[in-house]
Length: 152
Image 1 (tube, rainbow, N blue to C red):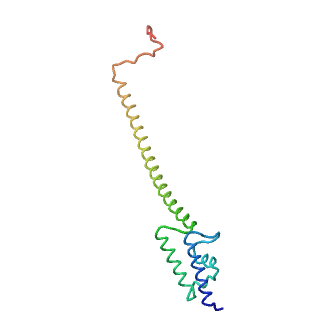
Image 2: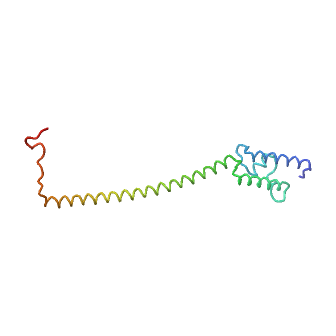
């Protein structure tokens, strides 16, 4: 079915109005900032945007404007913006997790080294006590409770 020039002009105006709404972030429930939603909002068949159909230039304009907004850091679709934000947050959390795991590994290694040093020092103290015990001229004092004449 052929459309008249007036109908085509009206369709283009509806498409441009829908395009502006979508690119401002006015996404209808269940829709996205894409050609399918653009066609539905404008009330035109989606196939009219592809091949050598009458509105391919409007699809190209829509995609170019959407890409320009995305390159400028603006994402008109709130869901797409949320997805981008969550992906960034996920990447940061993965980085923090990797850093935490590395820190835990370093601290575990440090703990093992510290325990080994303490054990070696304890062994050295015991060895020194044994070596001093046999050669010392100092006699040990009796326990305090058996010492006569001590003041409390």
